Image 1: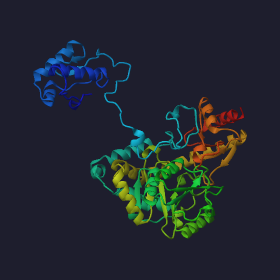
Image 2: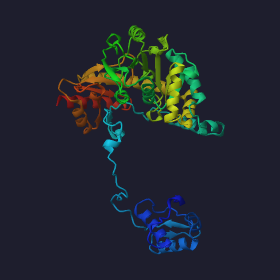
Image 3: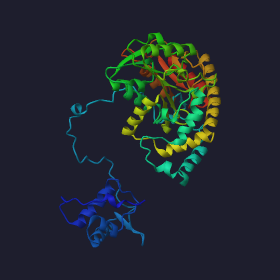
Image 4: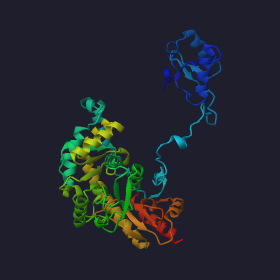
Length: 485
């Protein structure tokens, strides 16, 4: 690896000769760890031209460093950091500048302090990872994704790869969503009514920014997706949590003067309850009554393996008041960060303009790779494979839960990838989770999903998307034993 010539610059305040300054620059780079053993330095001619000094000055500096074993010379190949060069010191470099800003006063709006749960980044090392929202490498189609990525890098797709879309999206991806994805949810839409987002969470943020102000009111499910609550809190709107039941969000509980209603009717997050068709109609009627807009997060509809998924709420919308949010991040892999919104053209126009001002558009290569993966049938094959595996794991989970006398608080009628659990009264699942991690078991405490200060602590979520089927019974047994103790 070569060290860039742009790394070097002269300090006009330096006390000493140019030769000694060049020597010091290189020595400091080695001692700080920026320049590593075996890396090639710029040629004497190139560095001299870059710094605006004579070549002999650079040559003398290199020669001195060569004599002190900081550098080595390899024939006609040039100068390299010596294999015998001093190792970087085992301490952090001292900051060159201070921090004299009073950030408590300078920060106008705070985004820290939310309730996002801390999941272990090294969850793969745990033997029993009942962790939600991670990809299972045994299920993902690495080979075909790689081929699609290579195809998207080809000369034919050079424009799609390199162009600045500004506020537009990849036409192939939009076409697939219009012709294949949305019809499966009973939705008919034009390209002008669709916006690609950086995942569902980005879509939720865009909707909150466009629709809500400090004077408007948003109704959310309780419990709900914790990141949504954080987003709405940051928007400073009035927030009304509505307790969910076994059928999801009860429309009659939505108060008057509500402007925006957020709901997850397919698989309520986190209870996984599925909203019946009669209640969906009642929710649309209530929204019409209030002249409110509904944000439908169509969470996990692809993972319906017990029964066919119900049509989306958007498919029943006769007024254009439902904004539909979908995502490929959960069904392909979380790091993809690719989702989409469907809504009235007037709303999508504003959301598109906001997206353009913040991040312009999602990366072109990612959009085109996903478009190929979807259109060539690899996505459907992945979903079929995932459904079969999740169905098998779900059956094993329920059998183990029954045998160990654990309590299920909620499980989707159509499938999904997790089960909402409840421990006995008095059990703090955050404490439980810490104890279980010592035994290689990862669970997700449920407190953060609830609104308010006095939140229930006995709920927890068990996901089966990333744990091998064979390990489920033993993992459930360890959870039961830890609860009993």
